[in-house]
Image 1 (cartoon, rainbow, N blue to C red):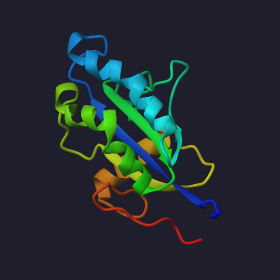
Image 2 (cartoon, helix red, strand yellow; image 1 turned 30 degrees about the vertical axis):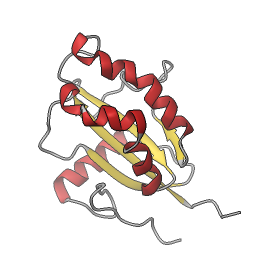
Image 3 (cartoon, rainbow, N blue to C red; image 1 turned 180 degrees about the vertical axis):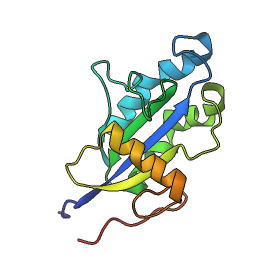
Length: 153
């Protein structure tokens, strides 16, 4: 049996909604949350995700912006995250993201390594995202296009 990794991959992504969550325009998005989250929860390499009592994170906000929706999760590694993101129902909704979210010029996704067992806060996620926006990809905060390995043991 393989040793448990010392580090896991944290990811945050944000989006500015095109319309209110209860609008007809976002019906497919909101109806997709429960099934997509269920798939995430069962995915190989999934560790944790930010959620409230209802099972989603639509009531959380980040960077002091009441219009930004946040998704914050922890995965075993980049490969596990990529496998989930680009398959099944999540992939279907991802293809339609411009129907639901405004296009933002700045980075909307940041990744970073956390010690196994650490659950990042919304504030920590905001700090990493801002760092990526201001300084570009680094071991501190990186993107899907330019990732960095976990810290040396």
